[in-house]
Amino acid sequence: MNDLHWTELIVFALLFGVVTVMGFVAAKWKAGETLEHLDEWGLGGRKFGSWITWFLIGGDLYTAYTFVAVPALMFSAGAAGFFALPYTVIVYPIVFMPLLRMWSVSRVHGYVTPADFVRGRYGSPLLALLIAITGIVATMPYIALQLVGLEAVLRTLGFNGSGFLGHLPLLIAFIVLAVYTYQSGLRAPALIAFVKDILIYVVIIVAVIYLPIKLGGWSEIFSSADEKFKATPAAGDGLLLNANNQLQYATLALGSALALFLYPHSITGVLASRGRKVIKRNMSALPAYSLVLGLLALLGYMAISAGTKPITNQATGKADTNTIVPVLFQEQFPSWFAGIAFAAIGIGALVPAAIMSIAAANLWTRNVYKEFMHKDATPAQEAKQAKLASLVVKFGAVAFILFIDPQFSIDLQLIGGVMILQTLPAVAIALYTRWFHMRGLIAGWTVGMAWGMWLLYNIPSADGKRQHFGSSALKLNDLGFFGWHPFAGNSMMIYAGILALAANLVVAVIVTVIARRMRTFNGTDETNLGDYHVDEGDKKLKKIGAH
Image (cartoon, rainbow, N blue to C red; front, side, top):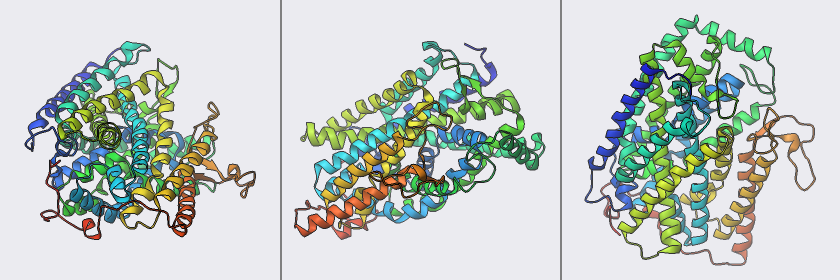
């Protein structure tokens, strides 16, 4: 164990203590008649207004991993790391209308998860199960990544041991998180998100004003970064994109935008809102976070200019690049303010981790447990099952960190993004049309998932240390179809998730055409056109908490 930085640790612990108290108090905040119902425990009573929803969704999408990983990628690779900015700019116009329709149809029929909607739209338990499993599996490494961000902070504070004691602070933090999430449900991260976002805004505003002045100005910062990338040339690294990574940059941004609101935790934040007007306001206001994200990314260049070095992980003996931003803050800020910055990152891990675990628990409860194990489960039994499932999901994520190389956990998120994209036809497109046949959607999902995993399996890491699941960027030269290589010799790269989604759609179309010609039964749709347009106060809305 390294020497602890006591001033930073005390400030961090005090702020962590404040949000812990808020997490337990949240059970009575905007409380309904009972928390023994998924509408209340898993969706906060479906009555969050504009401000709460803004902080909740923002706290859900802009995570501790964003805070540490995007600048770390900029530090290591340069312009390629900036993909996160355009994708968060284009995502909101893309999802504006679909999310309104999802909210409306879910409120009419009492849907809690995207798989609930698929079950109602197609009457297919199998298709709904595939969507649910995809959401759960894709979310697990996402939760683990929040731990990566939190551990980067703890490591910088001095908790850098190689054994159990090195992970003990992380375990304590997540036990606390598990307990107050179990008690308060979605209300806990919704309330804590206020503190998290305020801290992040304060830290970023101070950082982008104070650090450039201290480091000699933006010109000096960009010059230092340019010198570093020119001195250590590598494929794709640099202040500017090159001919090889421009396509990958664009397709990764587009694929990430399409995937973001397919994640169950993103939809959970939307379904918890009070009405369509709330969602409209938020889709208009949330791009403000993109400005913060752009400023966050530039911390990677500031770290280069400051000569910041990552801390060596004592458990692996390797430099942990995720500590770049915490170390930068520790070296450049007074200890008390560094403690506030560390708290912003740490709390920024707890909020999304809580929402993600709740979303995954809702999927398990409604689309696996209730559908296949206990069809007559009461609302109270559903709530109990979801609470237990949320504990399992959280500590499953902790296991990722304890027993798997954290760097591999980060790479698992690449898999998660490719996986969740395969739910787009059954979830997003189905909000507008039922043209696709359920057998086509199942076939498309199967092919897209299989091919996507195969593509990722065959991509080595950039440093050559791992031959499989090393990146999501596929060289066109390596793209083949049954021995045919249409782009042989082409060194341009493309996001593998887009290719898998394209295959998914092609197969879904082909199978749908065949099934329609054969007049194969396409399930029963329990929704109707009017269900997708109802708003707050409409008589068609299902009563909150109704069985």
